[in-house]
Structures are given as C-alpha cells and as structure tokens.
Image (cartoon, rainbow over all chains, first blue to last red; front, top):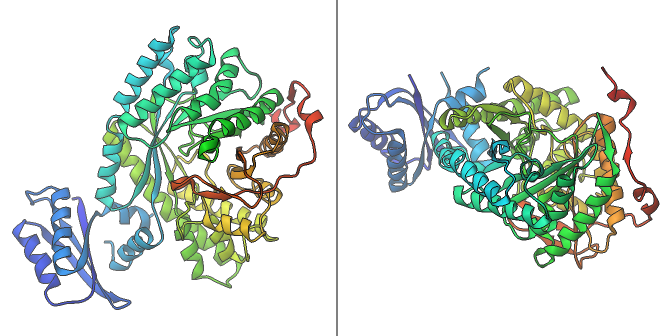
Amino acid sequence: MKKTIITVVGKDTVGIIAKVCTYLANNKINILDISQTIVQEYFNMMMIVDLQASEKAFDTVSDELAQIGEEIGVIIKCQREEIFDSMHRI
Amino acid sequence: MINISEVIETNKMIEKENLDVRTITLGISLLDCIDSDTDAVCDKVYKKITSVAKDLVKTGKEIEKKYAIPIVNKRISVTPIALVGGAACRETGDFVKIARTLDDAAKEVGVNFIGGYSALVSKGMTAADELLIRSIPEALASTDRVCSSVNVGSTKTGINMDAVRLMGEIIKQTAEYTKDNDSLGCAKLVVFCNAPDDNPFMAGAFHGVTESDAVINVGVSGPGVVKTALESVRGESFEVLCETIKKTAFKITRVGQLVAKEASEKLGVPFGIIDLSLAPTPAIGDSVADILCEIGLEYAGAPGTTAALALLNDQVKKGGIMASSYVGGLSGAFIPVSEDQGMINAVEAGALSLEKLEAMTCVCSVGLDMIAVPGDTKAATLSGIIADEMAIGMINQKTTAVRLIPAVGKVPGDNVEFGGLLGHAPVMPVNSFGCDDFINRRGRIPAPVHSFKN
C-alpha cells in the first residue's frame, strides 16, 4: 500500500482538522494515523492517509488540499511517504 | 511508521535549509549520430536528443510534486562532440554548427544546460579534437545553453602540455568573444584532469564513451542542511562533528537516490550514479564556506581551512556511500567562488586568495572554480595555473578542474556579474611572475610513477 503524508502547518485556529477530514471523507481517503504538535507557536499536524479507494489522483488531491489550506490560512502539503522512509530508515 | 518529528525535520530541510536535488542529468550517447556530412550529423543529433529527452523536464516536475522537493535543474550531457563530429567537421565553423544544434535541442526540450561540447585529449589531440577546441570561443559565444569541457590530463597518461598551452589561449579568446557579458563564455568552459564519465554537474558534464545509450545521473545538494545540523553541535569534539556530517549526508543522499530511481523508472532509462557533491548556490544559507565557518573558521581561507574542508569532504562521502550503492561523478564539496556567497565574502574580506584555493583543491572535488581574474592575465599565466591544478589531480589520482574567467577590462577589486546560479565574483589578483618558458615547451608531462599498477 502506497501511503501519503499530509502535513498542515500554520497558526492554530478552530476547525482545521474538521475541514481537512471532511475533504478526505468526501473523497474516500482513509486516515491511518494522525498526530499533532506545536512547534514555535505553530500548529503542526501530520496525517498518514491511504488514497487507494479515492477516485481522485494524487495530483488533484494535492492541489485541492493546498487550496483548502489557502482558504483557512494554513499550508497543507501532500507528499508520498517514500521520501520520509528513504531519509529516516536504513 | 513515520512519525511527526521525522516529517517536520524533512520539511524543515526543504523549506528552510535549501535542501534540493540539484540536477537530474540525462546522459545521451550520440555515437550513433556520426556521419561524414555535418548537416546529417546535426540532423541526427537534434532528433536523438529531442526524442530521448522529450519527457525529461515533465518527469522532473512530476517527481517534484510527488515528494514536494525542488529539483532545481534538468540537464543533458552528451558524448564528447569531438568524437561525434570528427568524421564530418573540416573547419571550426562545422563544429560551431553542431554546437548551435545542441543549443536548439536543449531549448526544444526545456533543459537549462547541455554539456558535452568536449574533447578528451589527456595524452594527445587528434585533428578533430584540436579543431573542436579551437571552435570553443565561437561556439560558446553563439549559444546560450551549451557547456564545454576539455580533459587535458590523467593519472594514467600524464598531462598533455600542448593542450594546456592551447587552453590558456582558448580561455582568453572565449573571454574576448563574450566580453559584452562579463566574459560569461568562460563560465561554461572547464579544463579537467581525470574527468569522470558520469558527472551530472555543469559545466563539466559529458556522457563518457564507457556509458550505455542513455543514463540518468543525479546530483544532490544541501550545504544549508549540513550547516544547520552543525549549529547544534558547536564546541563538540571532532567525533561528534564528523558523526553529524555523516548522518546528514546520508539523509541528503537518500533523497537523491529516491529521485534518481523514480526518474529512471518513469523515463525508462537506466540509473547511473548519485553524485554526492555539496553544491552551493548564491542563495543565502546555501554555502559550503558557511559550513567551514560553522566548523570553526572566521572566514573560508583562514588557517585550518584545508583541514576543515578535508574533514567535511571525507565525512560527506562516508555518509553518502552508505546511502547509495552507485556513487560517482565528482562527489565531494564544491568550492566555486562566484556561486557561493560565503566564498565571495571571504574574498572580499581578504581572507581567501587564489593560492589558498589551490591548496583547498587538493582535498576536495573539482578545483579552481568560477574564479574571476584580471582581464589582462596572459594566456601563458592561465596555462600555468591550469598546469598546477592538473598536476594536483594527476599526482593525487583525483579529478581536478579549472574554470577561470579572465574578465575583459576588469582589474582586482572589480566585480563580475553572471546572474542566476552562476552568481557574481570579485576579480582576484593573480601572481604575475612569468612562466612562459615553461609553458612554451612542447609535449607532455609523463604519467607519475604510481600510475604503473599493472
């Protein structure tokens, strides 16, 4: 299973997770793991998701999430998991 | 499973510390384009490049998007043109025609540089090699994206001093031909000793004759990442320092390996090598000189610089070798002056001289790189500097190179502006004592005794 990492970074505000999760649910994207932390007063959230059941391609999901990010004033990024695996796992 | 701190670390490297893949370079063999007619050669060369590389830029962009990591350059290297055009070209103008074809093909597929306008003359020059070398000034003046290199020596063959003498003159002419652009042509011309066949970095990339029909070579970078990692170990022992560089180099290289594999699969072209070089850019925070300062020097060029650079270079290799099974190219730390803001600062502060740079090239990849010298520097003096650098490469069994810009009309203290990745350079003074009688001798310097290993 090819996993995708979604990261959300920005000033903390009400409803960030709700917005992102609603989008994911509407597009049949399954969330495997969520974690969040505050780094230097910035809200950092990471989700590991599975796009397999989604009808939308990775590129589309990536663009649409970036768009949602702009609307609520945070940066949302989609990256394939391999970049983190290759960097942090031997 | 990947955790949030690892994700944050990677993204911080990309967003704040200039981690990028510096180049995906597609090597293309043009040996099957050889013909006895120059126009036919040009036709075949154009068709081959534009068909093999048609998806290169698009694929690069797709990978960038998939992993959200910038791939700064997409480039092409080709078989040394002296070999490709040898059977057809009768005068320098014929070779220039091929150079223009390469330029057109590069523009058509959207790459920013194409390397391989080259001749390999480490022992002797064929008539075609010499013709190509003599065509370099015009070729670089009449194209935008073509890069040229000449290999004039190797540990196995010694140094071809006839070629060294000729290259001094050619560099002068190239400067003159492009004097309206601060002698920019010289920034695209490299003189090598022990040139590697699989170097993905410009201006010295060419696709060696030992390579397959097409190959993907990737150059990673990330001086900023190493610098930031070292900030957290200030004052610690050398062991901790080295360990930190190694770990960081491993991470950087693994990203390159991932991108190379992906590009290779998408393009259907075999993966060649990862080049581990730390390649600086003029951007703030993307400097090898800054790493040297972080190791503990006031400026690059201060006493201790050669040792610090040796340490850095070795640890980068040790970390990188673990991360990729196929490491090649130049693999080390680049120390160009104009492309590294920290180096420029060091020169302007009076901390870094041409002689110190020469010493530094003994312990790191490449050599005297992107250094502007006064426009009235004599051809023989340039040849003398080249010969010194080639000797370092030959004796130490390593690649060395010279990319000097004798900027027409400029004197020490002036500034030369190339723009973009090539940056700007303060003109450095050159030792003006003569070496004419040395350079005017004919023939070659024999191979060193340790080359006889058979």
